[in-house]
Amino acid sequence: MPPKPKITKDMVIDAAFDVARETGWENINARTAANKLNCSTQPIMYHFATIEELKKAAYAKADRYHSEYLMNVEDPQKGIMLGIGLNYIRFAVNEPNLFRFLFQSGYAEGNSLPEMINSEELMPILSIMQKGMNLDLDQTKEVFITLSMFVHGYACIIANNSLEFDEKLIAKHLERVYKGAILAIKEEMK
View (spheres, rainbow, N blue to C red):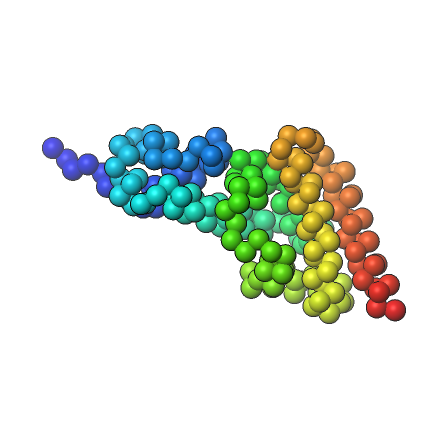
């Protein structure tokens, strides 16, 4: 008789990620992960002492997936910030359960705006923006905050089924916010 396949920790995390993606993070539990893996709940609880630990691991996987999704800009020539902003909103359209898991579940670590804007992961984006706008880093961060709050609001409304995704209209609005934020910063410099 062949040995039973071993259920790895990564397999359990993948299963929990799939549950969150398909039916929502609230549905992650030992039974739903085990059903995905076609096994008993024993391997789930072997790798994770609590379901809370499993949810945190699935959250980390969702966060990595989201970051890759954002950076896959279709047409960088149109503007990297516009592309990232549209991808953020597209993510809410295409992955509403993961979007809610990432931004509306309370699992995010470092929820403060200063932690976000000063994170190492954001520096490549801020550097590109800074060069394109000819502003200093602090001014660039102000523009980024303005744009990101607008984009996040749009994405939340869409992820919660309160608005349809109209890419042309949203791109137009993002351009206005971006240009307006730059103009405001430059006026403050006078």
